[in-house]
Length: 149
Image (tube, rainbow, N blue to C red; front, side, top):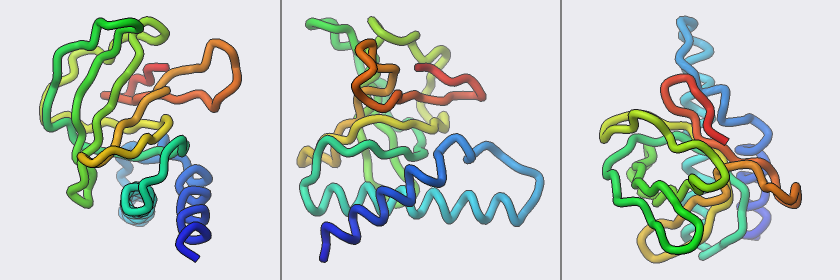
């Protein structure tokens, strides 16, 4: 039963598309987008609770900590985001395959889509870029209106 709920939440999150979170002057649209964010947060919470991995999920969060780049093997820009639910995720963005997210600061809002991997601290989002082999859904990070993929 829990797996069915997780699948339904993940399907909804992917279906609604995170790139719709841009600010809107229309209050009804803003409310709908807030509900989508809650749904994405629920998908992450469910994935964390069930210790799921290899899930393609999108979300929105606020950068709470910038970390040093990981330069071992493929280079990754790393930072931690906090979702509206309070859950935190590590984003590991491959900067050998995609451009670095420019001018990123703590307190900035980012939208993202990638592959979620469970860990005890909340999880890691990676594959936030196009797959050079075309075997996975293309991930991305959006910051200040620019999409990095």
